[in-house]
Length: 242
Figure 1 (tube, one colour):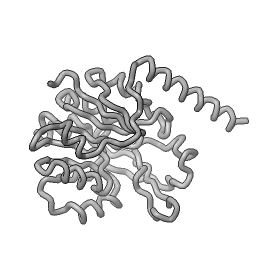
Figure 2 (figure 1 turned 90 degrees about the horizontal axis):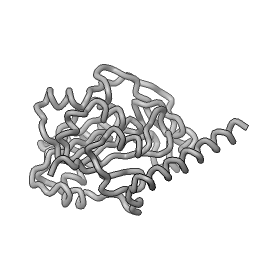
Figure 3 (figure 1 turned 30 degrees about the vertical axis):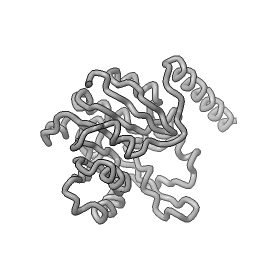
Figure 4 (figure 1 turned 180 degrees about the horizontal axis):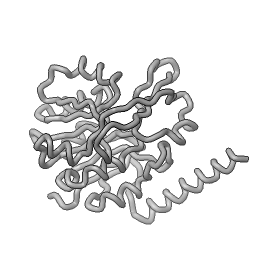
């Protein structure tokens, strides 16, 4: 009975979010993800400044550098497992700066829900789903992903990080924070005011406790408009920056 009630609430929320998206006139979801080449065309700068918040082991970082060889990329990742692989892959690249911290709404040390598990035998230690937010519906949708441990990780507000590192305008932010998108936004209002584009993961289901759906993220990003939507991701443009 309890499971049926949960399923009903989930379906109701999905319909409500879908209707909200339609009312807001959001574009339809495109079938393919945004490619690095397309990002390069959108950014349209020879030496862009890019922030990759939630970079894991740098696979996407490599692709971004291939598309924009003149870019400077600041990468953020709190999980030591992908950090070790990142350093092996990109440790000698002077264009890349790795910061072994989480980005969130507050400064300090906070619980990080570490993911694990194995997907069809291909990933023996799945480290792509860890989050500052406690997993919720993720446990039902992807039961093979485990969250058996919690570790303390350093966390910094984006505004404070930019101030400490003398970072002004930002061309592009790639954000993959597993449900903590609103936390990054809350801690980065000044930085985001000078950011041209944001490409962020989102979910209209509450995969992590307190995760905001897309329309909830747009409510706290009033200066940004949707350029295009992809399966689980959205590209936003700062309408105040030409």
